[in-house]
Length: 99
Image (tube, rainbow, N blue to C red; front, side, top):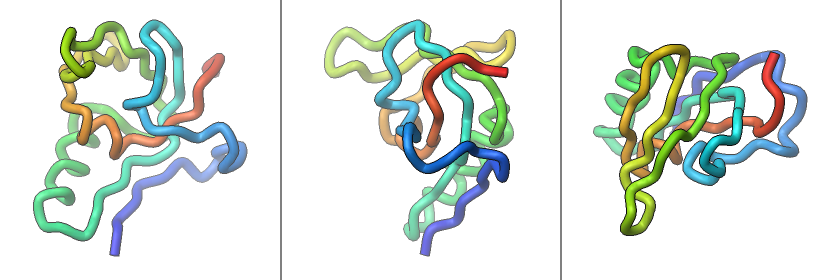
């Protein structure tokens, strides 16, 4: 069973995608941070939340690795983090203008 931390005021399920699918430079708003049933993914969810990937926060992909797009450099607030694709796939976002 998957654990999910979600943004209650998310507009709708339509338009929601994973952060791994966001184009470079495109602003997005975090809707949820989910983890899977396997043991290590709950720790990934906790780490992402500790870094500031919380529902309602604005994020922007600023760069991608050359081969396969891994890692992904993501800016949240004034901080920039490098995420692996599997970590970015745990973060659900709505693409478009933010707040």
